[in-house]
Image (tube, rainbow, N blue to C red; front, side, top):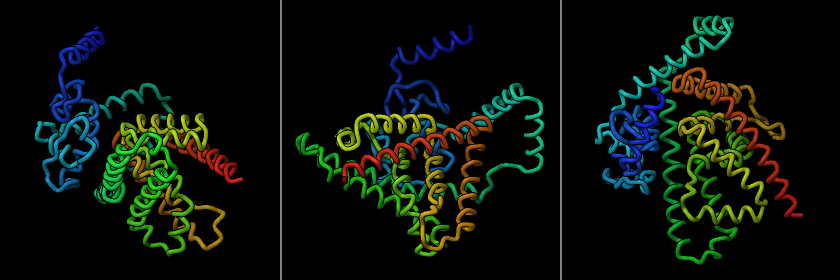
Length: 348
């Protein structure tokens, strides 16, 4: 009966035509004390605890127009509008506390007793939690990605879109457009990766080896964060890729990206994963790599990613998200290998 009542209440929200206070999209209900859509709810959850001081206005006006079409343009002004609308970041903490408590109760009920005892023993032996320096590290990575990748690529996409809109459809489907797009993406991502303090500690040869070996795969993961399929430029590029690599391969990759993005739905998580994967070594490298030092760096960021998931979602969801991301990475490796084989066939 309670479920039916909740469903009717949710349905009535849509029927009455309520709109999101932040972006004017159809609202799904009250989130953090304000009527919003699911997108703004998720955006506020991801960014509110960092505060406005962690962001900057993309256009240096501090007064960007935020609506359904522009809400991705400026995170600073969008978050500012969230706060002005009355959204409370304190509600995130209280909501998370209740959710974590419910999840913990559910886990203890469903887990075998020996697993609960083992978890309690591990908790007693070592408290798994994010310290202040961990949060500062996460905040730095989040902001550096915004600076070097997210904001420049959004600007690039809009300029490309404006330019290509002036051209006939056939003129848009050219390999030069894809190459220019990929090169911009790769350059932006390399700038972000080279901003990491740990990469700067390595020799130039080791830095170049890690980046050269991993950057293509990292670009594909980073696309989850920035590509906007609502812009007509990207369907044109997808059509070009289907011609080059085959429709089934591109559609499978597209499905993987969308599934990954919808399931993870966490920008910070993706950015931490990029850093973890950067420090993956390759046995084909003929130079000298301090593999033990690189492994320790990767272990540090793997732990940071795990603690972030644990702190943000609770133990059960953290396990699921972490294992699912590993699966997605392995699946993407397989698709990337298939794409390389296609490329080699075209060069023969």
